[in-house]
Every structure is written in structure tokens, then in C-alpha cells.
Image (spheres, rainbow, N blue to C red):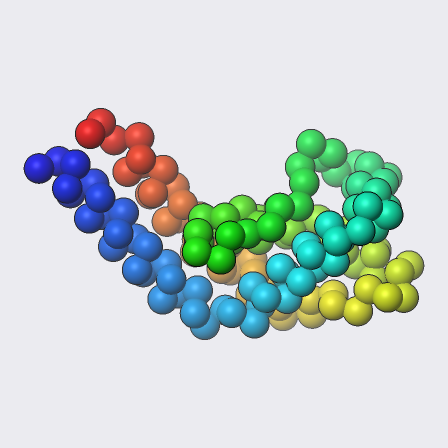
Length: 132
């Protein structure tokens, strides 16, 4: 009984989220490309971390790839990339091979998507902590 309702609720959330994310594929892909660029080379990752440190941002946070089949990992990737928006902008000014910086509109779309996903992320967390 109750376990079925929890699983069904989580399934409904997944369907809603996936539908909402379809309209944002380009923005998600652009952010994902930025994460891949930074993490794709130890030298670039080191430079990124140094910039995080110099800007006084939380050094414990990191950029993580998302798993395409797990929308919650996309939420985490977007949330963390948004924290480092200024670092990405600095990177664009000092690394000529970095050409995939999101536009202000794309950052704005990512922020709105993140707010949308957070509601469902929190709800899913509630479902997962419900006694089965």
C-alpha cells in the first residue's frame, strides 16, 4: 500500500521533471560542456580551482558531471555550475581555447531551471525518507 504510493509519487515527479527539462536541452548541454571542458584536463581543473580560491568561493564545492538518465544529478550539476558562474567568466577572459561560455540568457535559463528542479529534488528527497 504505502510503498506503492511512494514509488508512484516518485514516478510522477520524474515524468513532470523530464517534461520540464526537454525545453532546456540546449542550456543543459552548454553547462555540461563547460563542466567537461574544465574537468577534461588536470591543468584546466587546477586553474579553475585556483580561481575559485582567489575569488574566495567555497573550495569544498566541485563541478560534477551529470548522469543523463538521472535528472537529480543534472540539478546538482546546474546548481554547482551556477555557484561558479564568475569563475567561468574569468576563465573565458584568460583562456583563449575556452569558447563555450554560456550567455547571460543561458545562465538565467539555468537559474530558472535550477529553481524548478529544486522543488522536485526536495519533494523526491521527502519521498525517499518516507517510511516504507
